[in-house]
Image 1 (spheres, protein in one colour):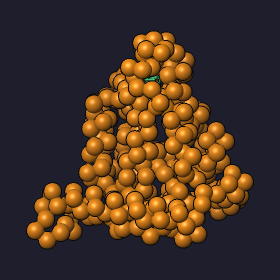
Image 2: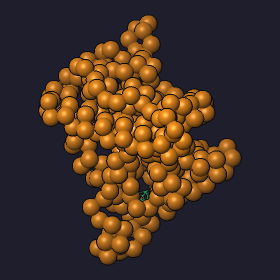
Image 3: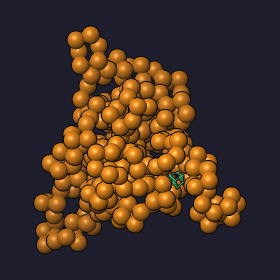
Length: 283
Ligand code: SF4
């Protein structure tokens, strides 16, 4: 399958004549819009494939990308190249606006790829600021994925601070259900899940069929360490959430995220003190 033809990425060095910062930002916005239209045309010329067809794609992908005998598993760049070839305009990237390493990696091969941001209504100001910076600085197209209810409506229907009383229900309404709905418009999503993050993620495959959402799930960074993510972000000047350097190695919703002590597990600040370490999107 041929990847959708879309605009070249905008480089800040190659700003239009007489440019400057504003011209660069405008050029990126124009390229983003052009890319959006190209993606719509590409989708109109090829329908979203059925679940059965997508399962076959997963089998092919696993045969090509997973380790086999002496052959090591594919690198992140190889996984992304495969995903772009296979899914083109039907590929999305998920991001919590913690760091944009995966989005950057994919956008180099698929400029202005859709980046799905679960906008729960409970994010830190720094996270929302990061979301804004991403649109200005990066060749991606951020899609805000919002719950059916605003926080005020949820408070009215379910009582205030549901996240304290029943975080599973809160995550289900504000994160999991909206993302499932959004994914119905795609064939595949790439996530930043890494095996080293939690015990539940220790066996995360590069490619699998996501039964919960009925799409293909791709984890290009599955084998990456924290250090590799940080090194990539540094080398490529990737936008990162400022909270990462303020004691929050893992950033989620404000009511459910605390700073961690030196030496603690990176996700120790998520739902701290509760028997919960996943929102339900991935595990
Ligand atoms: S992380 Fe907390 S505030 Fe965010 S959706 Fe889950 S329970 Fe609600």
